[in-house]
Image 1 (cartoon, rainbow, N blue to C red):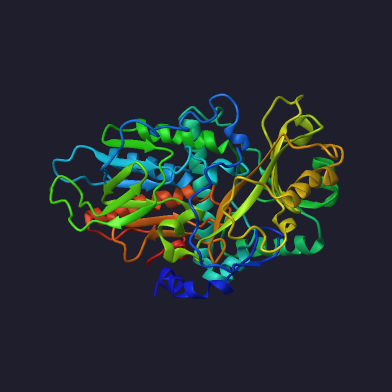
Image 2 (image 1 turned 180 degrees about the horizontal axis):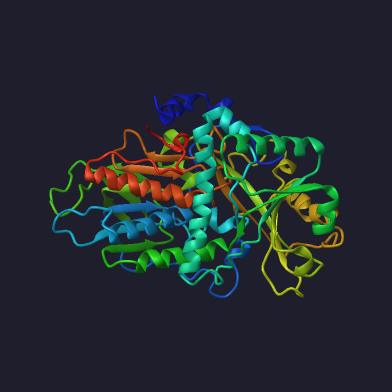
Length: 489
């Protein structure tokens, strides 16, 4: 039985579902089976959404002519949905996505409930950091050595491919792509021992590792904090700008793809069509997507809705759980040269300094601290139109306590916002693949707050699955794709 089928059997037990929090935070429980709401209409604007021309596609396709037919419908315009459009364009151009004889162009449409990229991708902390060793023993115990290696490989593949695309496209600087490295802050000897054990297990499994270890004295001399730490490779990026450029790439790669975008067009229902198209130059028309602007008929549907997946797939309520995260943008009191370019995780959250000139005081993006919310720790919350004051208080005070010479105590953030993540019962294992019993529907969702180094590759896998189905062949598992992510074997 597939992992997906097992989870369907567990839907009725969702009231007992335990979903651990990230990092140091405590586990929590879900006490509802209700499907997710549509995204809130009036959300808190994130730092990434501000400034001139920050989101040029914000309202694209929200008015005017409406697409009523497509071959592929992508619901969601974040990292997953836009990556899928990008991979479709490259697959069609490269002859890896077969078109019916006589059909010259693949028709694809991206439907977004709010502004372009206004969900989790446009609200996250800006980190593009693959896990290097953290948690390796647990993953190996759960899934075996081969799958543990794949579990880490997909993050390395995604992040390096995304960086390559930005550099080769000439827009790495415009999306603030910074390869500054990543520091895990370790505040106790127990944490050090745990990470050493993960490192040893990863090496024993044959994993290539790139880890620098720092004593407390070395950390203090290098970064100004008297704690232990490790440094691994990692990137920071302006996520909304990256996705915008990726969509532009998808739209300009080939004339064999007719790609359209409709923002402010929520999909409220997906219904089967009783009469399929008999046109041999088209794919069979199987699904009707209902929106306030009318229906879109299509053959393939990709649910790239992450935390909101159960709104259109109610049987996933309890299997993909919305969880609210909170982020602030704080101005450091020291120049960029004192903060360095690394991103961090430790204590109550994760953070990194925005790129500026060395003598400027940078904005630091800092998120986390869900423990401060108290039970149920923001579980089941889809309201990104407000913030949690208790969480905000911790976010304001943590960095000035940890780095008193770099951050001013009591300084108010320049921006504060929330975003909705999607967690699965296995917390860090998304659903990727066909939606069983719904022919032609696929999903990639439930990244557990760690979608940036995963969604790009997961979307590539989905496009490969659809192409294999059209060719009547078995899909070949990429060497970087973990089997536990798949909805079907």
